[in-house]
Picture 1 (cartoon, rainbow, N blue to C red):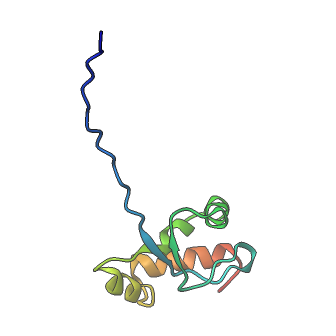
Picture 2 (tube, rainbow, N blue to C red):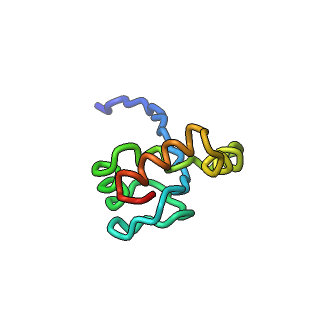
Length: 94
């Protein structure tokens, strides 16, 4: 007696790995360099984010809005500039 089996098609969710650029100050302790691009998760990034409040905001998704967002880091008074300044203050910068 043969068993009847039906094949079911499983939908595999493919996660798109986001590319993000670090736009914060250089942090030698964690190996973070301004302008460095990251894909996926990295232990040095996780460690830095866990120790420095707000650092995660300095990793910017590379998409069609990236040029505008990057520009705002240099403009005083913008959310991005304030976040950068807060992180810089925590690590002892000006």
